[in-house]
Length: 146
Image 1: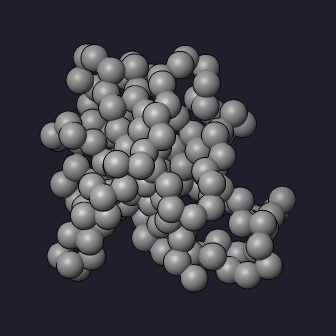
Image 2: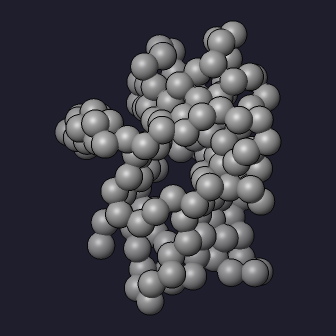
Image 3: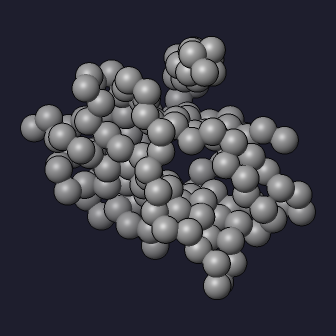
């Protein structure tokens, strides 16, 4: 287990060099219906929350004909980590999971190898637990296993 967490931390650090930047804009990506799509493949997005009530939503839809395994981690240079990562999976119009909390290890929240069947959509919600009083920056990394 320590090895997996170590690999997750190392992969986040390595991918931050290629991160795309986003800015905290009130009303933008603040709900499931206005969620920002995450691309397939490996990607890193840097953003921030600007208030205790701010939240950012992202989603990915499996448009392939095969099952995909989705992994993501949320990291921050803040300690203790002010953020929490939650997810929800929509399998089809009549089958939707409830919002569930990602595992936490130090300053990283992570989901590892979540199975996404063809047509399934995963929604990710980034919010704050203990807002630090000023804008809080985070990085959200996503990748897929076959």
